[in-house]
Image (tube, rainbow, N blue to C red; front, side):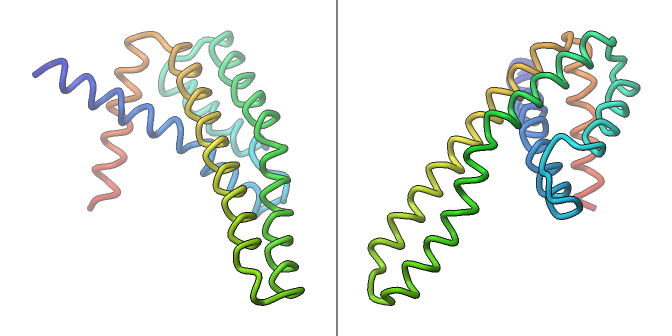
Length: 151
């Protein structure tokens, strides 16, 4: 039973950590157009530092992991933007060329999958920076937040 609970807690924490970069990227992109990694992320990282008792080294390592994620995913974000423009242009040029438009959308789906895989790997790296106690505390925080959102 304990292993099951720990596995669920770990999955929840991992999911939260994976979701955070995407949430920040979406919000930051709408606010400033520059995507993930802006001041908002740093503010949340400082909050996490206080809540989890992160050391300066842990904070630096996590920041570096997510900066690397941003750089790694930048070409995919650029590609996704241009892909939607290409889909529109393809259909404008020939409204019956749905197959070509679908092929472009499939490319975008592949790019999205790659970005999510990159984020999953980054989350795994970031979680490995935390101590077991910090991961447990993060798991509790995530569960509490989910409880509040369900109300």
